[in-house]
Image 1 (cartoon, helix red, strand yellow):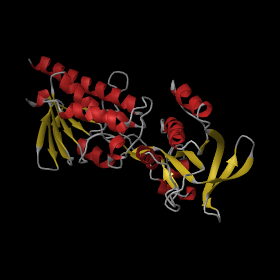
Image 2 (image 1 turned 90 degrees about the vertical axis):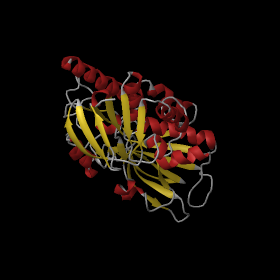
Image 3 (image 1 turned 180 degrees about the vertical axis):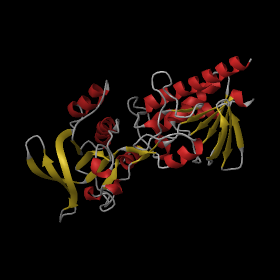
Image 4 (image 1 turned 90 degrees about the horizontal axis):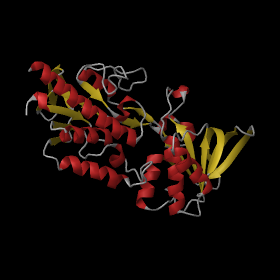
Length: 351
């Protein structure tokens, strides 16, 4: 196939996989370039448990998406590779890969995703200091393994605290955005913990709860009413350790305006979504702009919703900001369809 019949898809997470499948279904060739040695993005690499809102295990749901592209003759895949150079213009790009290959494509789609917030940047909340302070991704791996245990000594925890907005809505550390999905993921995680360990009490400490849309009933209320999750509106100051070895969550209950010191066995950081750490490099390589927080900047949103600041290059999923998996998949479909439609339009004009 010629460049006009090929779309380069960079990143093989949910958005990129969806884009590639859409392109192939429309009769064009998709070439996937993925820097990791496996496909599936964060849900597979980070070992997510059950996805929100479907409740399916990540390995099964994303696994089907991977199988779909791997079995499609219109899709070729480069793993453990990056795009190092892009030349040309819309309709006729040439991308040089780190493995020495070149890809000629009429359009490019970036599904390059995000980076999980590093909780080391919130040292006062105990991550990296105490073994029993974890992130949501680490706790999801525990759920996937089917056992809830304190990493320090293997005991079943009596109490687990989930701290919301770790790396989100925090101007002091330069994170001015809401990460959109953390509240819902945390309420879902609380229910998963209870399913595996019914004797464990789960507390969620929050500034605000944002289980948007239909998630309110399915996750926020269900976690309280059926799984007895305890919600505490609070400002957390620090996490320390008591003489008996348990963790102490210290702060202020902002509803009753009084200090709190609550002993916990495990503390979980509900980590936010940062821009992809490679975005400065991606910006230079593809000649596209970044918005002020470091996510990929988009074109005019209502007539070119998946476009970037460079014609012929499109973007989807959490590359443009915090996003849930279902929306990322939908954006991947939209980006794939838009890229193919634009290529057909260019071919029509040329003929």
